Image (tube, rainbow, N blue to C red):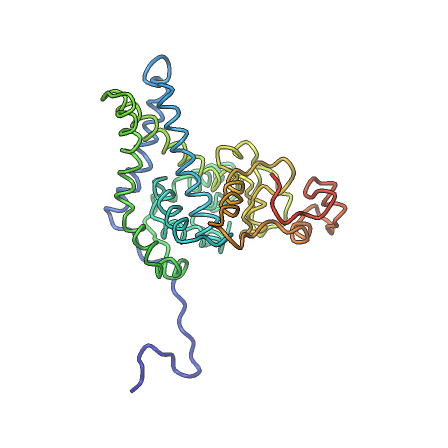
Length: 340
């Protein structure tokens, strides 16, 4: 008996489409809610910051949750799940998926599918968030900036995860974390409030922690992440050859935990370290190095000297000497472990 799922001889399977229909009205509403409410909290934070409502505990909780959830995105969602820059044991794999989900940037599988699609079509038709989508005039770039920064989130088209993230769909642990995104969204807002209330033994401490370490922290992380999509494809340094307009934008290096070395990343997407030149701080790479030392991460793809020199983009053939003079490489070959 013929298996109906098998291809006939001489035929090829039809590729999965790029899009998987549209988001439901409920999904679209929730995206807008999660994007707009934290932004309103930031707007309210300006008058609150002047004289009342912000304690050192609130600040400490906000910074702690910012980096906890931020590394979940930069190390987990991006460098690990999207690009496979290293291998992780099961515990680290699940922890990264949970931490990244608590950044409130969407479920892990959808996030990865969108980002893999971005790399497949960077700054071309099919890229979900290119700032160059509408042209190069000042008006078109203003519209493109808004689209790349957050406007694309409000579109109803949905990237097809069966095409761009089939490995994650087949992973039972990650699929479970993906389904728990609503629970983790509640947790990322209530956990700071619970800590603030317990540590101050007051409802006021819970309320201010909810505001600063919950809503404001989420909003700041949102806009830093979205700035990599917008600013880092418009302005900055482009030392490496890439197929798109990705750029290194140093002012965001610390806040983005190394993600704003975006031209370096697009030139070598599977590399675990984005800040590959001397003086380029990349905190995410340092954490990955610690994971490697603890044995939780293996087969880490650290920068390779010969590949980076080939990618140098200065309008003429690259050479090891040019690489050293540009600050890309030390005078001796790159060591096995990364330099920071």
